[in-house]
Amino acid sequence: MKKAVLLFLIAFSMVACHKHHDEPEPVKDSEFTILMYMPWSKSGSNDNIYSCFLKNISGMKTAIEYERGLGNRRFLVLIATNESRAYLIDIKYKNGACVNDTIKTYTGLTGGNYTSVSGLTSFFNDVKAEAPASSYALIIGSHACGWIPAGQRVGAKRYVSLARGTKAEEENLPLIETRWFGNPSSETYQTNISTLAAAIRNSFQHTEYILFDDCYMSNIEVAYELKDVSDYLIASTCEVMLAGMPYATIGSSLMKKDYNGIAEGFYNFYKDYVNDQGVPRNYGTIGVTKLSEVGETVNLMKQINNQFSFEGNIDEIQRLDGYTPTIFFDMGDYVKTLCKDATLYAAFENQMKKMVPYKRCTDEFFSQPSLWERYTIPIDAFSGITISDPSMNSSATNHLKTTGWWEATH
View: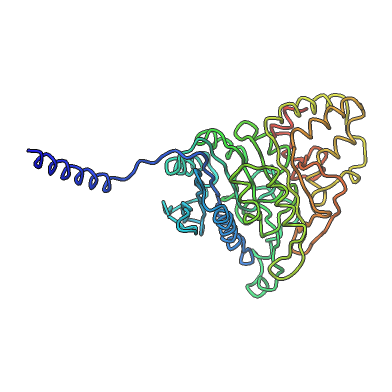
């Protein structure tokens, strides 16, 4: 009898183990999921941003391998390979190296998948379903131009010749060295910041941080739009070199949410940066904005705007772009000129330190506003975030008063 019972238990355990093996394990919530989102951004035959995206992913893998894995975190990539196809990839750590696990292939995509609230929400929901977590973070790699709405021409369009020239002419054009404007050749693939904010609210609800690996995204107009959907905004005040964020250097800090480490790692990389052609391009600016402090900044800025109008020389404010006229000015330097009340300005200056607790910049920044123009401009004042209030550029003045920032502070 005892022998029979023993045989039954052994048989049952074998069946149970076999059944457990065949059934997929339920998806468990992780502590933290990071999504690196790289929508279709390539424009023109000389735009090699896609190859840089691949290097960016490789850099993040280097950081994961350095940390010997993700711990209780997940790292997913959603990358478009052409206008209509994209992949959702789960980066996993196995046997000392990172491997790609392609979760989903998207085909037949149109611009609306990237630029509509419903399209972005669908992408983000796929990430939540695959990698549910207690919190999320978002890294966005593409061309960009700050808060300027989709479909707007900004300065000289550097891709005009690519659209009009012959193939031979295209091949002789200089390489674009920075990440610049959504998708310069097509409004179809340009996403407004308000759309991004709405999609985050619909899906993730909130993120730990949003890192823009794009040009000009560290500005107060963008920060205002995102203040309710993220804790931190990490971005550059100026153009970002085509190499993008140095993920191999800052990836560990991104995983640990070490914001000072992110800023320092960025600076240490770019202060000595040399591009793949061996040309020094040691230019870089970064600001980390604590979005919960934007509200108090709004209150102070409204007081300042109610009392003062700008009467200084606009050319004396620190510019942080190469456009003519300037669009993006250093915010701290602008308010220093605008506000004539010492007590009020001191309160504003103290608030700026709270709102942008981490920032770094090289001595100069690089700007290439058109194919034929390249500038290096000294940085004498740097607060880690820009403002467009004083701009006389029609790309700004035609739309600035419709921004949430302007409406809240004027």
